[in-house]
Image (cartoon, rainbow, N blue to C red):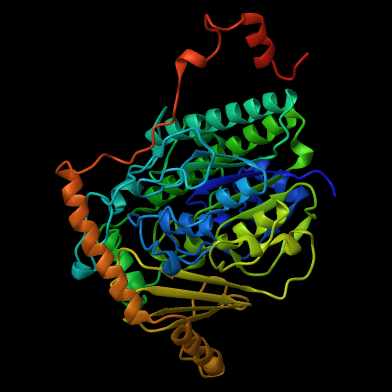
Length: 507
């Protein structure tokens, strides 16, 4: 048996694969992601399990569906009693680290990671709880709106670039420290998640990345359907983000897409920094590198922006794997982020038998090795704002089915209609498939019971948030530990010993 490989997963926020060069975008400048794709496996039908930050990440971490763990929205608590891949990898002998965003909500801000080297970028409390008792109301404090699109452009610095620069620095420093430990006798492989906020809106880019797209022909979205022709959920999204009432000029749409692509290139540069660090350490050939995201971004497609939709630009994620044991090629099978936990178990030499809770996914290593996989499906659940009932998605083969109790069903044949222009749910040629999907929804989910659970936790969290704002309890925002008395050279140290310890590679 060979050496256990390290794992480096680099996660973007709101990165649609359609805007990466590796996935065929004609203007995207993503050389580092492209290079990983060229020597590894590109998954062409990878989905999030909920097109919203926190639910997607909790499902990714736990290998379980949103409804199973109660991870409904961006203010749902991620229970400390839920095992994550960080717990399992630690049991398999890994040294684990999280640098950057994971949007943990609740007092547990590590969820199995041995080290966490940055704070998070978003609140860790119940502030962003939706209200299905008043689902038509718009919460201006934290709902997206079109002003974000209108303000697209450049800035020397933003809170997002500050955060991602810190995330990359902290990740690189941790990796070097791990290498120092290896040089002095440590034997644990590492498993790191480096999770960035870009290219998430606001669409504001550093000038050097904005300038990459000077005089570049950036395609604009196809013309949007009329509002009256949209499905009801899309209409609610349009209303919620104010796209139905705030018009955008072609120049504003262009600037937003240019800024987004600039921030994709910025994220790509962070991927390059981390890959270069592994190369400098001599660990590149023994590290499986995975690039993915928590969800995508509509970016004006179908008149929609941001996420929260089951259309392809919102629901799909990039998924690229490269490293030892990974073949070069593409994988067409549908899969999802909850498949990552079983994948990590296989990489680390474990299997599903060590799981403390039932897992909803399967290992993607057969596909990564270039083998056949009989499973070709992804399941998703959206239970957050701008709806008053859960919205389910089943992707199986070329077909995608979307169900919400309050809305007409949607069925798309992605092979024949990749832009999802034609809803086939009532088409006679697809009657059998539509009926089978409808029955599967009834079998998989008790939609009424799930809605009752969601509303109940919303109500309790609204009360708790008011109490916390009034001073009940302490805040949960993570403070990375730092002890200056043990850093660099101090009086209790022999400086020559310290210098030798810090030098990497050692003499």
